[in-house]
Image 1 (cartoon, rainbow, N blue to C red):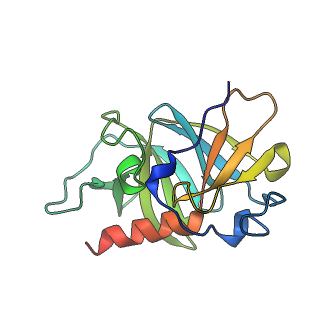
Image 2: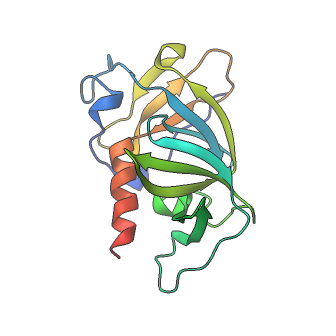
Amino acid sequence: MSQPGPSSQLGSRAGSKSTRESRGSSAAVFRDTVCVFWLAGRCYAISAELVGEIVHVDNVAPVPLAPPAVLGVFNLRGTPVALVDTSRALDLPGAGALAEAPTVLVLRRGSSVLAGLAIERTDSVVSAEQGKFTPRDWHDDHAAVSGFLEVPGRRHVITIFDSAAVIERLLALRFR
């Protein structure tokens, strides 16, 4: 059976133009290719344009006085990268339930590294044409979600994150 998206009591916000054609329209068109991953037993995805690479992190240095969502920093070929508890940063179920050596989606915007999102495991890359996109209900669903993707042959509905909302939350962690 299909997996539901995040709970409706988690907030609301307008989604990004990149994943929909018209706000709140049932005829919204999903245009992105997304990187699908698992977190706390749920299937999520984010625009593949943001994912620079996927790495496994063994050593994380703690950052004193960092927000709870920041697990520390790790070394990515000489560049310090903030490791973020994705569940905490995006107000999702399963905060703090990560492996000791997590899989990390390294998010980039242009040539800048934004952060590393700790996840359970990667799944696949899905293009827009592979499934049926349903935009979120703009008044009830989670603020960081743009919609849901049903792909034939998959047992679970993929919850698609709004890239702009994710970036906004990651940038906000820098200034707490």
